Length: 450
Image (cartoon, one colour):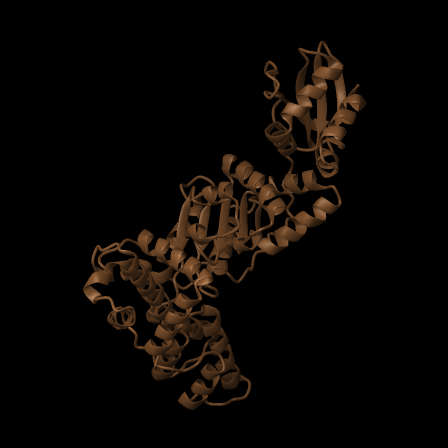
């Protein structure tokens, strides 16, 4: 009788959907109008109930008869045969009594994929990362049981997102070694999903991820346009979040700026806390250099430290690369680290040029090019011309200064962080489709950086 149901399902579903979700099902019993099906995981139950219960119910009623109730038996531990039974609410069946859910034993050999050197001790705190760091500490103490689930950390390349995410994971493991913590890049997750899909092992793939206590997904923006990957991650996200498991996501942009990601995922990304790690300011850059010098047991002249911190502005990774190169000269080649040597090393990483752009410079330059009074840009005016000029001011301030979004908003008529963020998104959109605006902004950047 179950084979007849499978024939109906096969005729009404895509081959991949049938092979993934229904081919592995084993019929266990049919007594007193109660059908029990054995499935691989509780996630399979959830997925079938959410997506296929209508067609499954019709097939069962046609073959087994109206009034048939459906339950699933899930194998929890294959070695001992322990299982749990769940009634299906999808066909209005009476709720059956469920056996206790038995947890599978934790494997001590579970590989977290964390970078062991990325800890809170080596993560230098500063104003640009203050909120994200404090939230990370809270999460590491009570993963899954704070308001910060998911914790969405975003910022430019090289500002310390991966370091902080791994630091949280390492701290969780230090406080509770039994916790299953997994770090995975978005690209690795995609490749795992593709392999599982090709081998018809999606249920096993999902079952593995639903066992994770703290899931860290790095560079989530690379899920863009990957519909199958997004759909699978959506169900993993739901299961873990509802089970009080912790999700930590990193991205090079905020959820508001992500593109080609399903709305239902973007909504969930904003459920917890969205924390920006801004570009390191001068003081944080200097503190990072001093911290690395202390750990490596070397010293540099204060003016050399200031020179590096003043010129390597955007990326902590670049800072560490400059320091590593200087330490190589100092320790292996036994060469004194002079200002000339520091300039040579830094010039290989960044263009050494003074940047003294401030908000007044930007507003003035935009006002002149757009032929709009500065007071109009700073006012509440909302004409198309004024709004466009104001958007360009926000964009240039983000590109050419070290101000936070809040500081930029305050300098331009007291706008909020959210207003500036929305404006930046609009400006990016306009620049993609408006070559004239792109040219004007490039012209302004060139003028301001002379």
